[in-house]
Length: 330
Image (cartoon, rainbow, N blue to C red; front, side):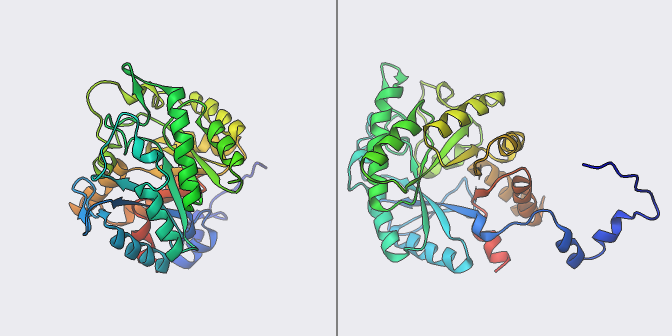
């Protein structure tokens, strides 16, 4: 970039800040509703929507409630949703057997959604934690999460969800090699257009607690998820994970959590020619929402937090504030 010798008073930076219209004209970044993704939770038993105590303003929806919420979101211009199950009626097992059934609950929900709203883009999570009795993302054998045994289950789960109509599969389990075997399985079954959104950079974070309440996957005592999720002290390790997942067939990569990892989002965006998504996770949401409700912050902090993620290089953001933002700018 050419060096300039701008000097006051001929250069006055405040000229371009003088009113809202001028500021909008020269703004480097903007938030588009089409770039926001709403995560949603759905119960397999409840006939009513249930408030999530640790995520004020968010709900576990009944199936009918979920359909109504999706209709509202589409009307507001939110065109993409990520669906997560809250399971009570099925027995959670070590192997997460429910996820392996072709007619499992979340597959049936996705079929209903796509029949009702074919234009909606649906993201389906690929991980076993809502289905396992251990609360782990993989299968526990002899006191450890068995990577390769879990891979077989993830492939079957992916095929079930692709067959149900999910547009994007999002492996969030952090097993080594998962993207490659899932992509191979999809290709063999002719799901050649199914998009893989890899949670390539998923830290063993302290910000996930409210989400685990929402899906009922609070970890039992024993094995730590730190044995497969990334160490948040590391940043260079992100490049290794990104490279592996792209080489194995990922179309998009995700960074999670978002707000505390903007340095990593920026590095990936600058060094890889691939869309980077960010997940403003449940703990980040609750932290901001609680401060807003207590009038410590006003609602403008939501837009500021999202803008920072787009400014750092995010192509799209999963955020529990998507509906709020769309309503504000409807």
